[in-house]
Image (cartoon, rainbow, N blue to C red):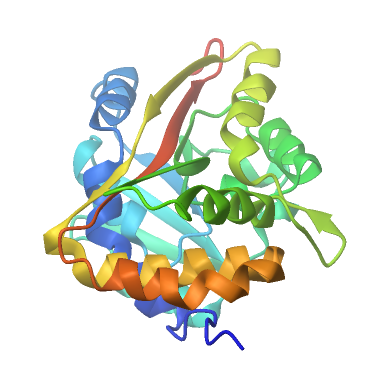
Length: 268
């Protein structure tokens, strides 16, 4: 019987482990475009959806003009409390314990920017459509949406089977909701373009190597576990595959993501 299991890390530990890789991957080019859009405009009000431990705020705040007020949204009170406490000096911040799929346009009154990181692929098509409608008049910056492409070097013949099963798991139905997974970035771009927004898309890959051993190990375990959950017949080979991969100190991994900036027509 396979010993592969889901990650034992708590969400906060996983988010903390990946924060540096996320920061290195996000598109500085899109952040610079956003800063140029705002110019020297004072008093930005920024909403971070599904903020986790606040890594997006820590990365983006320094790249935008001040002063800034951040409103952090999350459904997990522990994560939200940690995010509020960890925001950088020089910004004001409040936390809202809220399911972001329930946001509507009136909730965003006065908001200068809506942002999120590693969120869109966890939504359904209907939820993303509602979010895009709510943000129709507000600039958005959505970072690190998975696109279903992973590269491992050196290659292993089992890589493709795991990758295909993992992508299917990303698109699974859970509690009656079919997740968008790798289709999220393209769907979001189409939705915002239909509303007349100018949409910019940039790659934001994780590039992991010898200095990222802890993140690689945790990512690999979660990647394989999700694939086995989706396709149980893979369990026969999963343990040996994971042992090979975890034992290779020279393993390099590229996990592809995409960042999206949408600027509504006439947005101030």
